[in-house]
Length: 191
Length: 272
Image 1 (cartoon, rainbow over the protein chains, first blue to last red):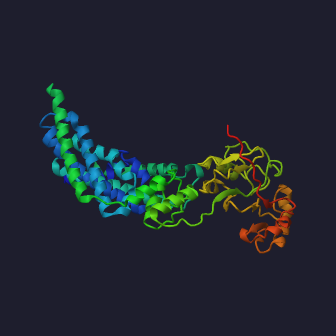
Image 2: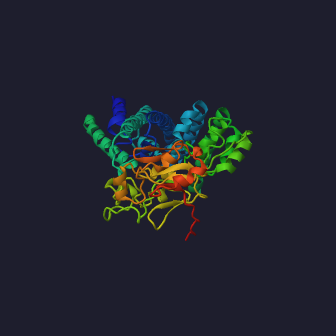
Image 3: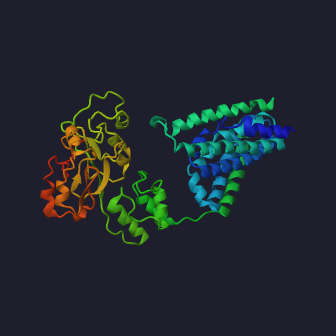
């Protein structure tokens, strides 16, 4: 039951983008087209899932037993950076068009605060291994959900008569704000 | 001392583990890239303006190597770049027609009648929303959105209220064409000397009332050279400049408002 709560919480209620406001950079940058938004969401989900596992292992097998908690952030950065490199090589190998579509945002997953936030939150909440796996995967799904919804809205927005000064980033931020308000409505689900 | 050594040791070991993992992965997942892409990308101007239709110079280089773009596809680099790219690709560049941006408005401060004083946001776009400060609703607004859009300092505002194009610096990237809210810029071959300096589709008397340089749709030019000039929506339009007979140019230049004629080539002003 605890696992289900963590899953729903990470996808809907405490969505990384719309509740913690983490990972806004790719959320705005890659949400112009639906298909690249889906790919970005999946790439982030992949990185998040593996990061959660690896950072849990490092945290619980190395850092906590040897009382090295102060190395948490540094070692998590190392994990994330290496994993993103791996994903980048992997995507480049299997799907060059996807690699092109993600462009600069793929290496930017490295500095995506959502992933760092995921590793730190999992450590902070003292999740068990299974809980961390679910938490990582669900957070990725939550990010994918948010970015895909955003891309869908922005594709429609292209046809709308947006005032000139608000075109592009301006209207995107307004839409993101309204989406965050809507997602706040899920808070009642957990109590 | 151990306080210092333990984190260094831990991070070194972790870093070593991850990097060896990456090295192994790299060996498995390495993608061979055509070395020509790098060579072509080096030659390109690296301004990433998008005039070629690709998202940047590198994307264009990849398209050239894959033969989906022409070697002469970079308008900014012009002939020189095209020849160098052609050399790498082992093909002929072919003839490249240099184009430049031309302004289709002759409504200087003197010629075009003012509608009132505009004191809003000083951009063409804002001015256009409220109809501009000229009585003519087609003419240049004079706030220089095009000058701001130009990446190559090829445009400047003349004191008569119209922007001018420096032909030597213009790369025909099309930024000014997009920037002008009244679509007054168009790309034309550099060799095309006869141009229509008006976009007004108002009927003759109306056009003449608001601007002394407007095309009043009298049709003199179209009668002088019917194979190259036609009248469309009260405006002279050059359909194919190559068909303009040089002998007929004096007849075309009989235009009562000089709305069609030879481009005035001015010496570039000194900067600063």
